[in-house]
Amino acid sequence: MDTFVHLPLQQILMRLTLVPVFAASIIGLVHFRHLPANLRYLAAGVAFFLLPMGVLGLVLLLLQRNNLFLMPIYTVGELLILGLVYQATMQSRLFTRLMLALIIGFIGYLVLDSMGVQALTRFRPGQQVIQSVLILLMVGFYFRRLLHELQVRRLWQEPMFWVSAGLCIYFLGYLQIALFSNYLLRYSRQLNMNIWAVHSLLFIVLYLCYCRALWAPPKR
Image (cartoon, rainbow, N blue to C red; front, top):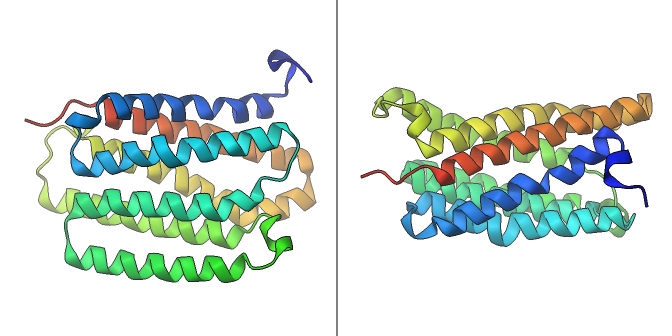
């Protein structure tokens, strides 16, 4: 096996993606008792679901095994975690009912789309596109309320601003990747690898934003 320093940049970035996830897990667990309910959902979700899933996916990749069967599980889990985070943040019955209906509908679609062994071993961009749209919708509701109420004086001290900014940056980029990844793979394998390297950078930015949010001192 090639040493780390001799790997292509794309492979190095892919392996580094777990570093900020691990950091966010540690920060979240250390500060857990002092976090509000919405950030507790995030801290627990990162430490006990997203990190183990990421480790398992990377291990399968290093063993040159197909890990795409994990994507539907990861997609639903991430969506449910963020749904809890924003439900606790928004505290709105309308928001809760709307997102619950959309998430249940998405799970139904995901089950149908993933039926069959062959479907579980291929990249399913439709699942990623819909998940991205739903998460961006949550973020949009949060920013709309933030602008409407104007109660936050220093955005950089608001943990949910960092969470939402990271999600916005990541999923706006990931949405484009999911839409065009299969086409890019047929056009150029190297270009496709470069695009996924960009995805790794976006992923690292997202979890650095999570780290900042979970590190922020509690409001008094």
